[in-house]
Length: 110
Image (tube, rainbow, N blue to C red; front, side, top):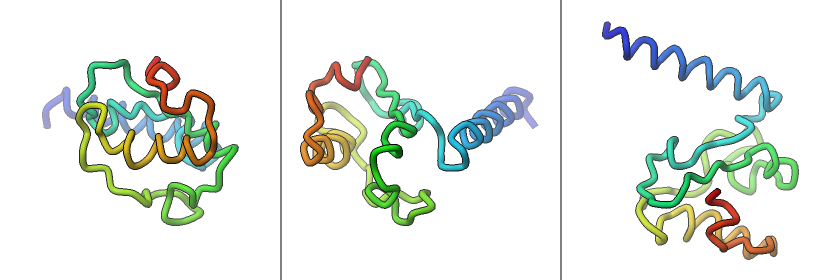
């Protein structure tokens, strides 16, 4: 087995396990959406604060079950301002929840 592949796999596993432990078994504390979903963007990555969102919302707002896991929505378009995070997930929820500056780029892209 390729040593780099083995090392990368081990680091990924350690990162995932530590994220679950930090969030008390309810998913990672933060999720770098650009890295996780390979979003094609020129703006800085959105580091989604899973921990802060789950403190305000029920898991079933985004996930198929209260235990988390599978998301309720499909994310297929990963390019540009019209990507599925903007159009299907983030902006609609931010509008529904009246998040101040919830569709302003700099609010999430830092």
